[in-house]
Image (tube, rainbow over all chains, first blue to last red; front, side, top):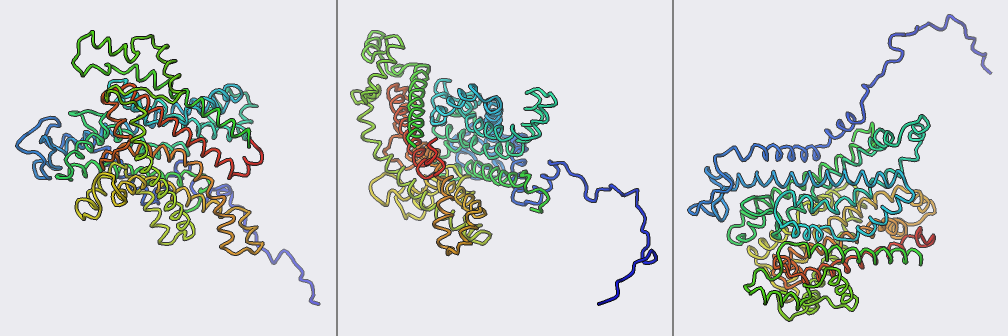
Length: 312
Length: 306
């Protein structure tokens, strides 16, 4: 057996209290959004998608003014041309400049894509929120209506609404796609609200006397925001596809007005001889949808609170 | 289980009723009438309207239509005189169904395979390859890849015929074009759900029991991972169906889609109505079957009966 070690004061030195840095936070404090942004920035593929989308939006705004062509002036001596110094993207079968038409089309297609998605989400949040939050008979009625409408193919309803509105026009297209397009979002929001509304922080807020309005606006919606933003990003390609589909079968945007779908439709008429006129709008439709999907994937990872603090 | 099926069935019936009513009203709200493009005197036109029953009050027409519908009669086409919508459907539906079924089967088999293989090779080259295919597949609309395939393999390489529907070689391009999107969606869903299942406790239990990895994959992982794929089969059928509109146009396939689109342009009331109702009922039925299958494969529903 060893002798027990005898401790005495001489063996220790006082390091003292660093009162200044007592409560110092070693890592910078980040809000949820800063944290998500940091993670998104590390995802190169998603950032590329974001960059392409921003580029297309800027070009949709300024592109048509960059050369001196006009979107509706036809020129029978310069039809079906390939890109040249005068016509940067070539010309269509009526000799109209494709550069200008592509970016004007981008305006229409992107506006429809964003507007339809936003409207769908807003209506979905309101209806799904009411249904999930209040429950009971209201929920019962709304859910039965949604169950019934869910089985109806939305593009077919969109086709019929376009016919009733006399076809063409951006407003008609937006109405046609929103009319039952909000259903998916309402179902999603309802599910989220059901999950959130029984959690402790909501109960605490209720005990403190918060009104339903306040709970919904201050607690439920901010907590769903991450998933909602991901959903919105993933839904925009669907709306852009919807416009392109309707214009492609000939009941969307009508010439001389234009959209990517209308350009693809016009290009498909002559594409066996002049494939370029079909490929060009196809390229823009596909890369937009691809970029948004990549960005959406990145956002889903970045906005997931469970991923917080992890490097990827 | 019986209660679950009954509930889904009643919802489906309501869906059909709402669909028929909505479409009936929307079609009557369309500007113009089916005879505007034909030159005829007002008397003849009045006679035509009376012949098809359009002079009666709307609600009479509605109940008349519902009555006929219950007997399976979709009415006469207004454009193709003396041909009923039923006859046109009988000619064109088999072609569209053929195209659609081939596409769904191809997409499901290939999609499941790629999704499973991607998940089993998680993080390796094959996984990235499948993820790439999946994301490109959901980003390219079917009218674009339809035209692209036609151009590359039909016009340039001359490997397959570019149009019509006359034998197996004719089906390759349109079926592939139509199935690409669905294939991508299934691959994505299956991969994600396989990866989610693999972290579940029951997989660990199975490993602890000493099952071989093959047994774990087939008996535990696959069975559970396939549920989310079953739920998306409904929307997938809807997607394939609207996809046939454009694919049939691109490849000049004599299916329903072309008649539907031309019916819209001609304001052929009974054609639009008949075809939409047919599409709608078909989809609702497909959704109902999917719900029943889901009930059968998901033990939580099968046993609780909700």
